[in-house]
Length: 54
Image 1 (cartoon, rainbow, N blue to C red):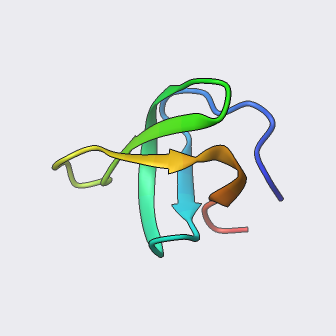
Image 2: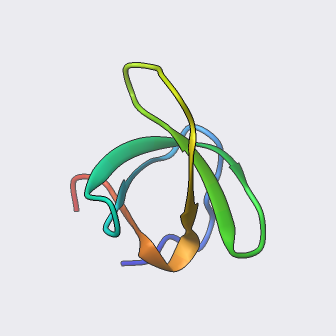
C-alpha cells in the first residue's frame, strides 16, 4: 500500500534501499526520511515507500 498522505512522523519502509525511516518532509514525489533512532536523512521516491508493519 502506497501511503496517500506522507505526514511527518509516519514510519515507512523504503523498498529501494530496504530501510525503515520516519517521514521528515514530503514533496510531490520526493520524501525525506530519517532513521527511527536518529541519524542522517535520506531522500526517497514516494512510490518506493510503504507504511511500516503492513
